[in-house]
Length: 424
Image (cartoon, rainbow, N blue to C red; front, top):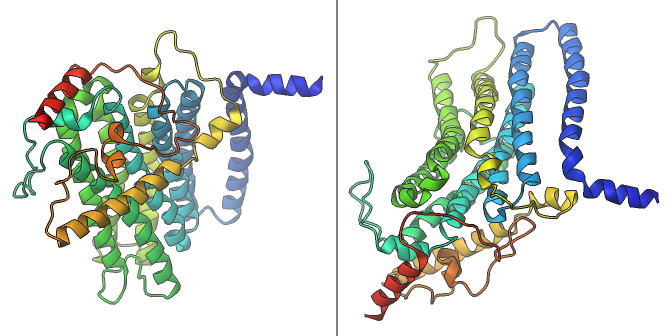
């Protein structure tokens, strides 16, 4: 009898998950805030404690806002192909906020604490790309639709580059230009760990005999390429993306991921060249000052980002009249957030297709000379031409369709034009 009651209770988890979250969060605030204040008063409540307190206020406002939106997506989970990636994007604010707050508390361990944020920002860019591709591929062949469009020109200062041919080449370059950051960022983070252990990292030092400036330059170039590919993809698909209001989503991703990164570089430069100096009575070195300033600003910015995410990635826009929530358990919903099988598959295929492209160029062949859908990596650049798909995980079900009104060429018209084009 007791076991049946427990099973019944867990099956109705959508009813009690939100009150439970509010209760646990209130208890945590009532316990940890007084403990922190007591400890700070015992230590004299110095400037460092004031920074931690002010930053913590913004962090503990941002976290419940993000968690609430995540829970709403889990409860009203009706469009798995899109909401799986939205949930991953929403986790960005709690991870960034907690990471920055821990960086304020332990500034000497910043290179290790910040590694989580650095790796997750690459994961966020990947998920935003997948979110856009899944949205566009719901009811159309994206590559064929792009082939019908006029050529998209490059943006200043790269306007001298040759045009990316609309269609398969355009999607290929945009997708892999974004995916490369997902590979480069964790690699540079791992290299920074090794350099830190051998005392050659030089965090915040722009000197030739340390690794920090070189890794920063690589990250800057890689992130610029990813951002540029996102902008080009948005420019080419703005009409098809208009129904889901893409501009606020683009701005949220760019503001949090790209702006925070370049903000950190500018702060480190300003501190290194002594445009920003510690106070006369401050024991901080330049490294500690730049790290603390960056983390303090991120704590404040994540509160603003949580509010922006609430409106830009709201669960309400995915609800359709008469569409019930999926019948899934609480545990499977939670585990679905951490299913990264699709990431592993895409990165593996990215490395393979880049290696294949380099090999073709060495042999003097164009990487796009093979007809679309006939090479071994067609499923990466053309989902409709795939013979096998990656493991979708808990949240993604490729057999489900989503009704999307694009206001452009229909899928049947696109396929007809595409077939006529290749039959000539």
